[in-house]
Length: 183
Image (tube, rainbow, N blue to C red; front, side):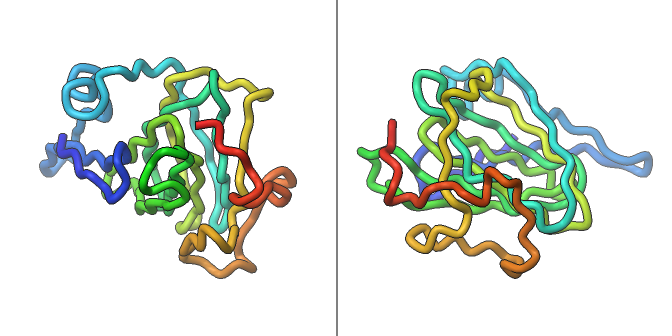
């Protein structure tokens, strides 16, 4: 696998080695050995999640507060999304900054998001099947969130605001400046 560093420490893009021929392709989507050696030796994933969404669905920006913070390894099986991670680590020089990565069933890229980040994505294709690994179980009492269109974060979502589809919860999250980062 090829590990690509981003502008924010800890956030990396992973490109698997694709073996293709006239029959199709094969790739190793996860290897604990390679992940520990090349990305983060301290992460043990304990839960896999999957979501299916249609064009314009935006899920996020979510995080879990300590002691239940989660690292995630995310990918798209089919379709295309813009995936976003916002740095919530108070001591980080990139606190409040974000990285956005296009993930698709065609590019097979994965995005590793360590603990200390808010995460969200918007579906750019007709539909998208999104899968992610977490290193901590979900705890509803530890939920944290930031509103998707926070003007201070100024995330460049690539579809018109009128096409964004949100859950009732995702419509009412606080702004970044109004949360107290637990990281």
